[in-house]
Length: 221
Image 1 (tube, one colour):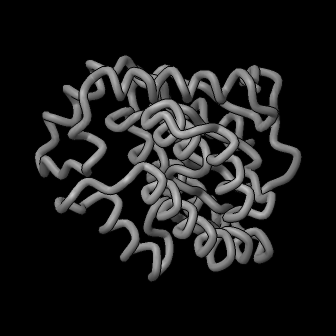
Image 2 (tube, helix red, strand yellow; image 1 turned 135 degrees about the horizontal axis):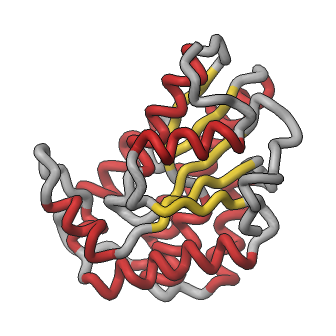
Image 3 (spheres, one colour; image 1 turned 30 degrees about the vertical axis):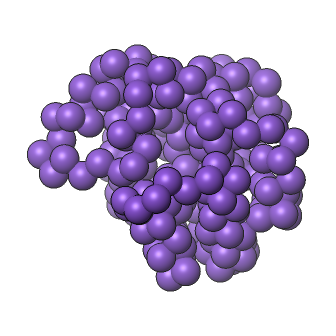
């Protein structure tokens, strides 16, 4: 469900907020800026990511994003993400929600729907089963989707100083285009609120729009 940022407000705060988008869209930078702002306001914040939000998840992340051996089967990849998510939900997300903290997460189930579904072509019913097993019904209060042209996103990736690509960034342009379209389809078709932002905007503009929806002003005071 794509929300109107002028009329939408979170029902409760702190909330579980997920940042999504194709690689190179700037979601990790926005996540960091939102976290810094909330902390400066005195709000309790838990920053996390998928994959790799737990000790077990860090090892799974290496298998998923740094593996340079024989190509993994698509189903094995899906199940590795599910294992990471199950541990993440149990060890980080649900405890964070119970503690009354903002839980800010870089990627969640929508990346699985798009990367493994639209990207790899895995059947949606298999993906839904893996997600349900891992999350046990846990969903975010809000998804921030940074939308960006795929060519521009890949150019950003190539221009990174650290050039620290993960294995998905080695895929062809067509793969990333399917991912982008998949994210937009999720925003339009799913019931969870999606704030869709044009990622060509400046980091400051993206931050101001995100904070407004979260019930905060961009004013640092």
